[in-house]
Picture 1 (tube, rainbow, N blue to C red):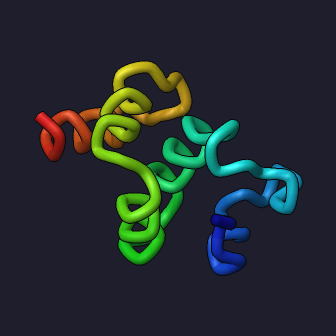
Picture 2 (picture 1 turned 135 degrees about the horizontal axis):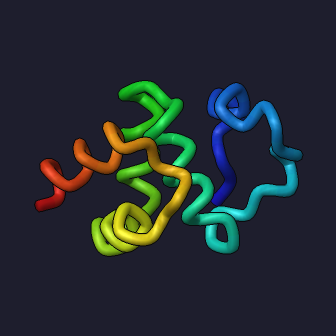
Length: 76
């Protein structure tokens, strides 16, 4: 599975074509939740498991405090 080209705009500082959905999971999840829109978050939730999203929310240093708080409320 590849990242949809519509999401490339959220990875302006990255070689988009080299992103790997599994190897770069935490980076992708963090970036989409911080920079993305509802459509991109919907893709994210269909691509990654709830457990993967929660684990990223707990361990990522890339999340803004507002985003981390939002994820804490959504995923308890």
